[in-house]
Each structure stands twice: as C-alpha cells, then as structure tokens.
Image 1: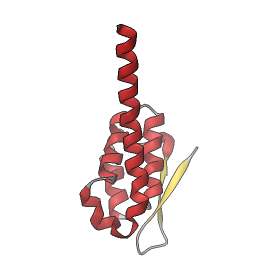
Image 2: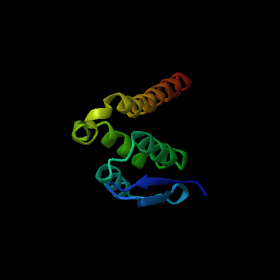
Image 3: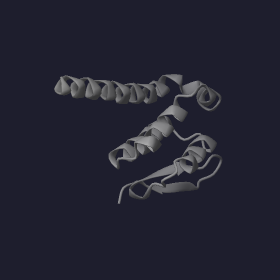
Image 4: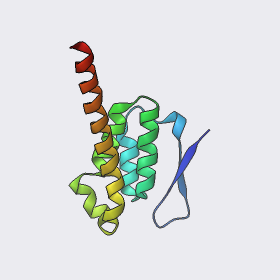
Length: 108
C-alpha cells in the first residue's frame, strides 16, 4: 500500500496519507497541504494519484489550488518549484485538446 507522509510544521509528527484510500472530497487534503506548507512535490504526487484513480475533478482541484495566486503567501520562496504544478495542469489541458481534436477528426 503506497502512502505519503506530510510533515506537521514545528513538530516531529507526520500525517500519513494512504494513496489508495484518498477521500472523495479533496478539500480535506488541500487543507492539510496548505496548513502544513507541504512540499510541492507531495501536492503533485497526490494529484497524480487522484488522476490514476480516475478522479479527475479532485486531480484538477489540487492542481488549481496549487497554482492559485493565494498559494504565493504559503510558497513565496519556492516559486520555481510551483512551475511543476503549472506544467502538470497545462499538460492535462493539452491532452484534453488533443483528445477532442482527434475525436472531431474521427467524426468527420
């Protein structure tokens, strides 16, 4: 069973998140990610797992929160790392565009 550990700020405690048992509502995960200023790579790991499970709405919710202007206050010193989130979001929308184009071509 794959999991990630989210370090709790100012503590030696970690919150363990089982990737195969992610909640249907990503809001709770996003709250923890923000509150603990979780490293960006864990945001992406969790988002990617939602995608693998076919939970596209949650996948997008995490990526959109991770790339929102509000996040700047939490991650002002790691702006470069946030590019990974933007790249993932861009790749998803590029994939959607390509899929729609291919579907239209097949219909014609």
